[in-house]
Image (cartoon, rainbow, N blue to C red; front, side, top):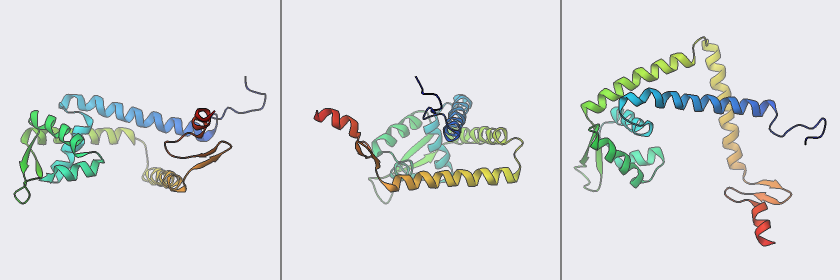
Length: 178
């Protein structure tokens, strides 16, 4: 039970804003996934198609690096897109170890439909926003990003149990030692 006058650690204006932000991003993702269902590709595959449509003959390796996934993970996604007839993989003429990704006509149609879906979603999201509102929101999001980026660079958080490092819980370590 809370003591009178004490605040629950997650009952703050900051936390309420974080919760709103998370709800917005989850709803945005759900709307995208719902709208893209009719295109026949999943969201991550869709991102690959969009990029490949604007970067003809992009390599499989470059796609993996761009999306921060392993070559094997990218190969699985590309295999599904190829099997569905959305892309072709061609061996690079200059390096037989590399595949170039070429979007097919079927893939182009998905991209065209998707552009319309995204344009509609953008109009919906920012309905009633002025140019000034958009600038302010953009600046605020940039500041939040900068703050989080700096926090990552700052290193571990000091607690009474010792520093909390990424992937390490000092409380669990203390229990294991006892």
